Image 1 (cartoon, rainbow, N blue to C red):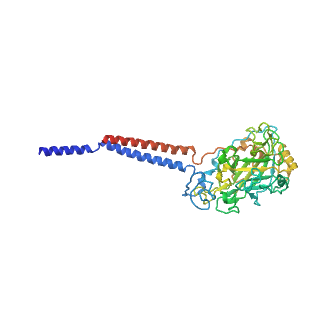
Image 2 (image 1 turned 180 degrees about the vertical axis):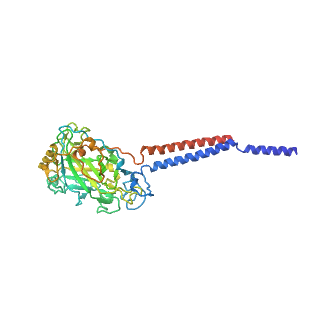
Image 3 (image 1 turned 120 degrees about the vertical axis):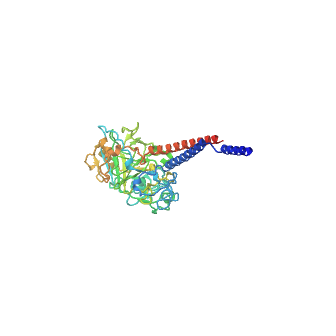
Length: 480
């Protein structure tokens, strides 16, 4: 009996020794909670990071729709008329949802340089239509003369009607013009704007068009304004005939934004300009695309090896670099009647819009650019210079006969928001000449605040998971 009693006692003792201490059980439970909680926070942070940037302009999208956005060049996944083979635009290589921003989230632009007493305050406007006749090609006689499809994207043309890759200076001089002033045979051209709506244009199977990812319906501008303005420091001199100017960079995705110069806005909000986003305009407001050309000439050359060195931009104070002289500055303003696309469904309800581009430039707005060849006759160029230097605003078709003084705008007035988003008058010469190209953009989703939130979520989750692991290892020590 004694042996049996001692045996049972030893058995109970061994059983108790196999059970983990109550402290170890509590530690193990707490470790599991921390591990699970930390993992959940890490997953939430990664998800927030992956979806950041999709919300710009969501007010234009229907409720409940979703968009899955991939890497640059891949874009959204899905099918339908607004999506190509790779799910990015109709051509498969862009645009993507992150290429758009609400214009009301952009910071108002800073005022231009103040005018001096001898400033050339006038303006000269040439009316050359909106390319209603549909003169398109994918050539660029400035950059690639004699090379068909040298641009690898389609250009809109107004003015000179003989511009193509094989046009000589004599051909340009003899060609007809779409301009009201027949003395203006200049060539003005820029990449077309398209809707990613599934439509097959006539170039759908052609080089420069659909075969190179430039697909969809070409949109004819609602309005094209070609205005030449003066310099805030002094008088301007005449442009040399056949001067060639390119503003912006068609390869800015590869080259960087150093030469990017086009800007985007909306009627009624043109004190706000975007350079790397397409604008989402409020209802009743049209998309505005603006090019401000270089206005300082080296005084010798009508072109240069890189098509840039013979021209320069005026400095922040309006002064030209040493060795350069001020000439009339061309400002092109294009207005398009296109609606803000529906971003939540990738443009299925309201299609995305984008400019044509080189295939590897992904239809980014920062690649926007415009080209100009001066084919004014000498007498009309003299009238332009006289209008600008004498402070008159000369209307199309009237040459230098206009007598109205060009309106001046103080910097504060130039930077104030227009009262009505429906109005779309061309800005005054002072605003055209002085409005800066770059502007700051506030993120429609909270910008850096949203980024910080998902980063801290991931960090906190990682710390909690590590704490849980440490507690789990400690529990194992207590158990054994």
